[in-house]
Amino acid sequence: MSPESEKKDTVRALFRDGTFRLLFTMRLTSNTASQMIGVIVSWQIYELTNSALQLGLIGLIQFLPPLALTLSAGQVADRFDRRWILRISFTCQLVVPVGFIFLSNIAEPPIWAFYVLLLILAIARTFESPAQQALLPSMVPRELVAQAISLATSAQKISALMGPALGGLLYVVSASIDYGVCLAFTIIAAVASYILPEPEYGDPNPRGRTWNTVFSGLQFIFKTPVILGLMSLDLLATFFGGVAALLPIFCKDILNVGPIGLGILRAAPAVGALVMGVALARFPVKTRAGRWLFGGVAIYGIATIIFGFSENMILSVACMLAVGAGDMMGQVLRQTIIQLRTPDAMRGRVAAVSNLTVTVGSQLGQFESGVTAAWFGAVGSVFLGGAAAILIVVVWMRKFPQITNIEHPEEGAVP
Image 1 (tube, rainbow, N blue to C red):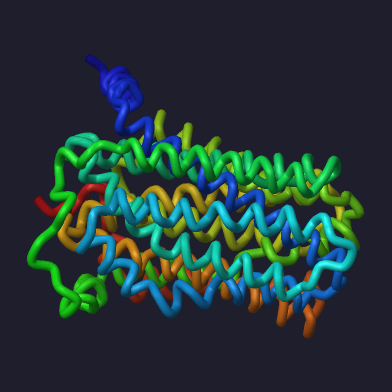
Image 2: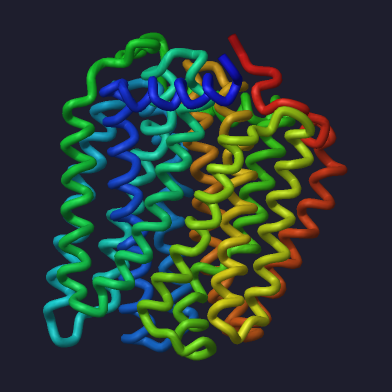
């Protein structure tokens, strides 16, 4: 059997497995709901306030819970049944779209109420994310873990495509309908979590993991240069290079394309990511993985700079496609390397810290974008962010040669 046929058989085997289908569905629907809410809330708040700083505050509000609770969330994911953590998290998330439906149907909704609901969502997702990531490797055979991670990442990218596009389109009809669809997706994710079976390749009720080990995940990361380098690279590149918070400004004031255009631009990175995902599935990285990883981040930064200066919708969409493609290349390689180099007993805590870096990069990065846009304008903010991402690549290639010299993404996997 050829390697390509073997890869196709592996994908079929995963999707024939009912447990993996539940995990895939759960990740797809929960992330789609979150992506939709991100588009709808940002447009509503900008319409109500016309303030770049208020857009930045959305990221700040979503950053605070992970900052305060990440280590605890990782410990919870390693100490308790991860399925029940997901069930409780999804049940709490049901409150959020219901609250937004209420706010969308009153004449002058208070801005603080939007932030309170975003805070609830951020707290629930802080506990959901590490449990979901740590659960996956214990649900599939070891030889299928890398492929399962790739497909799970694709689910995130599909949701990043569906969510913004659907959110922007439905907003033209009604914000309440938009949030109603978010509620339906969250219900599906919750139902899937309640029918998940026990893990076949891990202990659903870990023993011997006490609260005294809450910092062991951090200790492991700082003692493993490759993982430390990958997480810090992701943190800094997304912190400086992200443009999501400023898209309402570009769509309303520069490109003049309205909420539908906002949905298209928010979805474009996911399209680029999916194209890159298909390319990586057909032509997987087998050599010079570290350099390919850094190359993806460099593409991300260059495309961000060009987007900042674009006044043409077609060019802007092309730039966002390239942003998504570069990010996907780096993300798949990063997640595969980190997951396979982390022992199962510590995956929850390491995943929690990994999620914190992503959250700091994306959410606090939104606040940074709002502040710098208030100082230098939206174009200046995006240019500085893209340039910083490129500079980080150059510095990290020298600072972490262990990453630069990685040949295969599964190199150095733990037993």
